[in-house]
Length: 204
Image 1 (cartoon, helix red, strand yellow):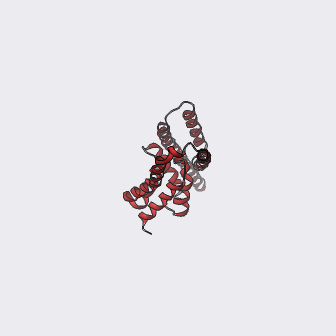
Image 2 (spheres, one colour):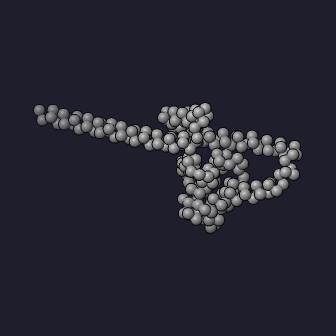
Image 3 (spheres, helix red, strand yellow):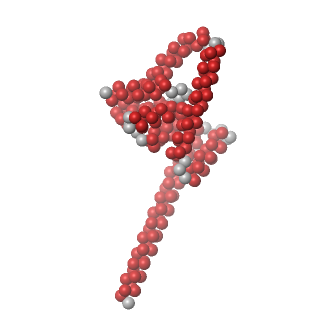
């Protein structure tokens, strides 16, 4: 199958069969792009989601653009983006034409309520997946809890929290690497001194 057609159909399927958008789409994006197509690793998809939070637009659309761009360049990114939004555009257009005639029906209201609960479950599943891949040490847990408090209680905008977390992560990694190199140099110097002492003892 042509790679552009494959990208379009895959992301059209993702866009057409997942409700809730954003994080609710993460399980299906992972299943289609990582497990089935092998277009990206799970870590890369998580990175795309994180970057998508910092850039304008919908997270799922940004992720489709990133994956498509990786597989087939700028045109692949464009095709994947069109694919993921096309089903929603068609469905919303149809609903917009008829929603006023059907929204008052009880059966429709119950269906929407059920969809809302399902979306909540999908978002929880996505959060758990992100947590397993992202919070891998004590520092990650500290960042996670700090961001949660600042977001839920202080109401700091998400974009600022993500950007500040990225800066903090860079600083922390740089300091950690510097300490690791320092420790390695100290061990090497210690080994060298021990060797020199052993040589001196042998000469004696």
